[in-house]
Image: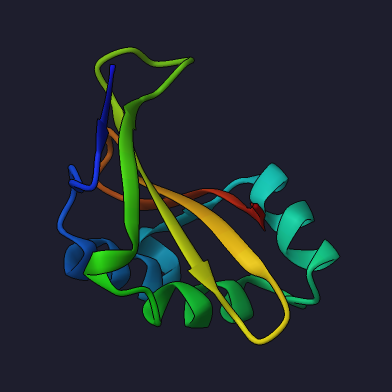
Length: 103
């Protein structure tokens, strides 16, 4: 199931969770995608997520590997790329960057 134009999670809460290394998870795949785009590390990724605006939500979708868990997809741009950033709140309450890639 997917919902377009509506976020499942409060973006400000996700940003707050990602801002603290103790409450953040960054997947290996998202890290690889970010490095390909010139984002050197976790701090660069988090700084870019902090710039997301609520109106950049593209869709909310159910996680493929964990039905019942939702993921919010944002489409945004930086100076060089159009970005696809997928965020989630984990079962343990941490903020997660699932995907960070060019769209």
